[in-house]
Image 1: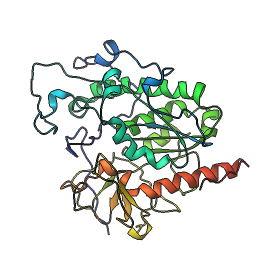
Image 2: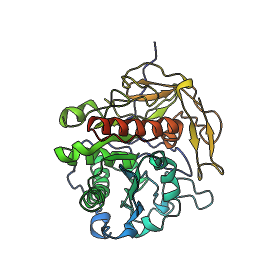
Image 3: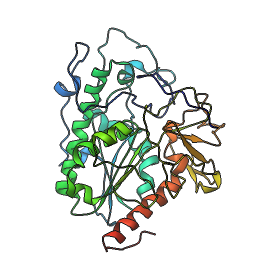
Image 4: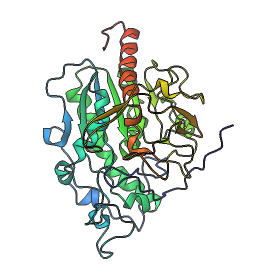
Length: 368
């Protein structure tokens, strides 16, 4: 019998990488939160909102779309408050360099556009959809690390809500001006997946939008049973070709002492083709390829059959936890590599769901 996992307490401080992101871990069960004395509304009062009619506010936007399906991708957390960054190593600090400086709750949109690694890091994930979809990825006013990890829940919720207003505005602009009637996929990672879930809750109750959604990939964040109960238009994927449903998981090893999975999470195993929310173990032989890309590594590498996986207590447990850099982690939390570990399976799955979507609507045009 597989032992039970120890789930996290709200707002743990988990250092996952000096290069990539940390997860934004907050309850995020409500869409808004009351103002509190600790909240400084920097993002709302001092940070201009992006105008998505202007190309500069899109990290990626297909100029001459050739695919018959789009993906709207909400990128992972790439922004850290510089007051918490070690100037010598670039690593994250748990205490500020200058305690007198005010906290930074949200990245400005100008800084988002200028951030040097954001597009490269996003490409390591969104590229799983490049073979099947036109890619659209907006810049947005990210909630800052480590403030959102360490803040009280109400303040963290408000910072994330600033980020969400941008994501919702980008979606609304995309649907009105860029979609042109095409089916679409919603996807994201970490903070971006959290905001994607909010978007699913608030916008996919529109039957017309829901009819056009091939699937949603809420990866590096959790969808809970309580959320499915509260938003009955949401549904987890139970097979590899189901459409209009959600794929969600958080990668970790069997020896993890904490978990990125939220209590009540429902995990979908990307290696299984049938009943993907089952606890069946998928062997490594089903893993079509783990792909690491710059800036994670100097040169792109691909390893087939890298690891198997199984669902347990809302988390996706790796049968072969990585032991070599850059993925080695004493915590056995592999959050930055949620896409990379199952890269080729996700790539194939997107194509399979698109083909199933077209067959259902008698618009069959297979994606190879």
